Length: 277
Image 1 (cartoon, one colour):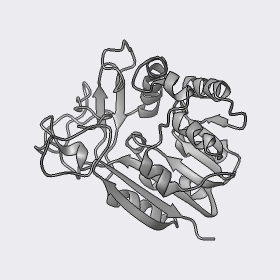
Image 2 (cartoon, rainbow, N blue to C red):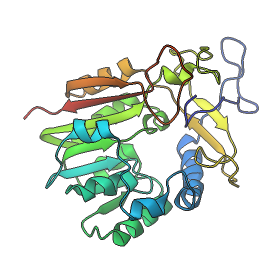
Image 3 (spheres, rainbow, N blue to C red):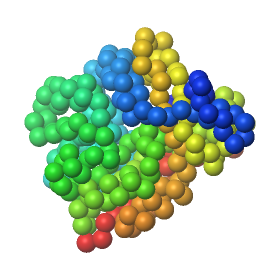
C-alpha cells in the first residue's frame, strides 16, 4: 500500500539467510539510492504528481496537520532534511521561515534552487549532503525547527545515528518535527485489508522497481534501491536516547493513498520532539 515501498526482490548470489531464503545484498546502498533519486528528478519536476507549475502559482503542498502542529515559523531558522526538489522547504519559506534544504541528490538541489528563484525566495539555502553528514556539511549550525517530511526514514539504515544527528542540529528550545508514513499501513496488501508483511521485519529490502512512485511508466536505468522499515517505537526510542523530549505523537487516518470503506488504519503519523533549553 505504501507509495514508496514495493515488494523486495532478493539480490542475485546473496548468501543464504538463517531461514533458508537468500539474504538481500545491501552493500553500496547509498550509491544505489542516490543514483535512483538523481534519475527521479526530471520525472518529478516534469510530471503531474508534484505539479510544479501549480506550486509556482501558489498552491500549498504542506498538509493541514503539519501547518497546525509546527505552528508559526515566521523569522525562524528551519532545516528540511532530505528535501528533494524543495517544494516543502519553499512552502515553509513562503510562511516566513529562513529555510535550509539538505539532500544527497545534487540534481534535486539544482532544481530546488531554480524553484526558489522562480517564486522569489532569495533567502533559501541548499546544501548537498547525506543526512549522516549534515552536522559537518552545515558547519555546526543549529536551527529552531528541524523538519522531515514523509517518505524519508525508510531510506536510512541507522535510526540511532539519525536521531543523534537531528538532536545536534536543533538549537536549545527548538524542536524536531517529523511527518511520516505509518508503518502499519505498509503491511497491508492491495485489498487494503489483508496483512501481508511482518511489522517487526527490520532487514533491508533490496528492490528493483521500474519508474518512480510519481510515474510508474517513467524510463529509468538506476532502478535498484535499498530501504528499511522502522517501527514507531524505534523512532521514539532513538529520539529519547539522543536527549530529545517527546511533545506529542499523532496518528492520522489520511494520507497519499486510501483504504476501502471499513475499519480504518493509521496511514500517517507525526511527532514533535524538543531539545531542552
